[in-house]
Length: 163
Image 1 (cartoon, rainbow, N blue to C red):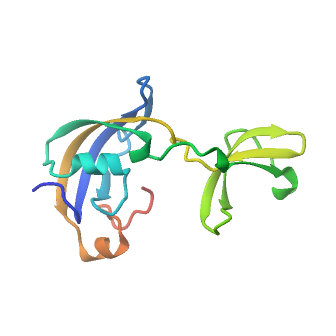
Image 2 (image 1 turned 30 degrees about the vertical axis):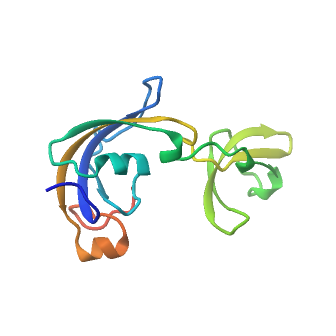
């Protein structure tokens, strides 16, 4: 069986930046399972995996435009500290759910603290980063009707929403 749309694919992977620093890996966390063709993974990796078979190993370099996008400096915002809960212990690196001007939910990261202002960044932490994946295809199977309806793979022990 080959990887194609509406197939559930199980992978082992590691992800490094251009300097070779490990960003993420499936090691020690169990296999990574996704529904191919449902935009569950970055487009550059999904495109590279199409047509691969169980046992295939592939190294894929994904540029930002096919990954998490380029950095957008318009997503840096300065907000008054009083927008946060009173007494909140805010520190650089903390992430918060926020609403975009268009009403979409997004995650922002605190990048700087000033006296009574907080500078937050709405870019994905990997925006602007080239992604270097080493992937091994462990398994390929047909998606269930429920997985297709939900738009993501379900794990062996039921439904998973953590990927």
